[in-house]
Image (cartoon, rainbow, N blue to C red; front, side, top):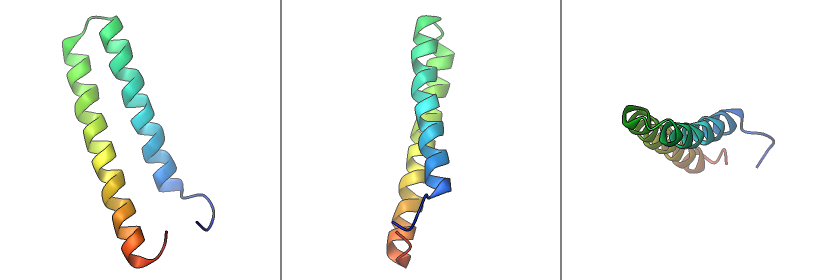
Length: 61
């Protein structure tokens, strides 16, 4: 890797915040919050994997 990949760092941070959001929502007994956090986590992780695959194919990773 040629330095910090800021876009991947941002996505991983957002993914961690989504996991934290799941924990807070469970603590607050909010089913809607849990569902929103899970959907965000799946979307963020999916986007991260797509970006990483494209970077690997183009040789940037």
